[in-house]
Image (cartoon, rainbow, N blue to C red; front, side, top):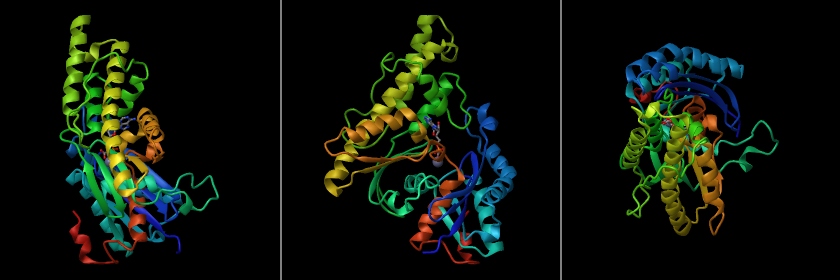
Length: 363
Ligand code: KG4
Ligand code: ZN
């Protein structure tokens, strides 16, 4: 098994990312252009603006990742790119670039599923640059349970193998990341690139029990999520505090009031995760003997969520093992496309040999 290197490109939403990863999991070079400031004033991602920014950044990001790896495009063994799901006009920018590079340089092309790429980041060998232990000993084996919490998705999946996943639960309305983004907007916090980090930081100053909010879907004993009702409950609670304080709108509230709202929202939104995930853990442990959990997607960068799920794993009859990528690898970036490509190529699944028409299948 000769080591090989993949250039991965990601442009599904508002981050233009590229990275070179070696098949043993070492990230050789990375570059990321975030468009946070562009979307800030609109309070969310504007697809047309995102597309233009991707077009402006893609070449620089690809070249930078190669430079940092000390490589030329000819030195990489394959090119991978996120082909979906995501914003179509944004995906297209990354796909066109990857196609062009693959054809010009006669390299295999790998189409990457964005959700699978988030999940597989939990299998990227950790601390690869800090230990002599072989990579195989440190990566997480299939099958495992995954909690995928991002801006676009909110799912619990049984992960059986590369390309093989069973969705045990999804969201009936909003995702957890969206709920964070909407809470941030309500409180007038910075939302470019997602409001999650701002809500998390503010919540540290608040009392999580101070604002009463209902835990969603208590009557449904399944593994689905719903965050739309909680979003409304947060807004109503904030408006009530505004009336008490004689303040016009929630963004005008004091730091302490806002912190209490943020902390209470975060507490209940994570309680909802714990209930649904706990149920899924019981099920797969009983039925499939699974006791490994991967927590992935942008919201997995949240420290409070990480520590609460760590407790959920240790507090069970049979201790669960939890794998979470480092925070910067939870949110969208190029390494996820590169690593997912490595994983697919390693099991002999690419979309093609060099110079094939298969390229045309991608947007
Ligand atoms: O995975 P991601 O970068 O993009 C999607 O595939 O959607 O996830 C972005 C989401 C945003 O909603 C953002 O607010 C949320 O992840 N997020 C966080 C944190 N960091 C990012 N949510 C809570 N706490 C964080 N620290
Ligand atoms: Zn994502």
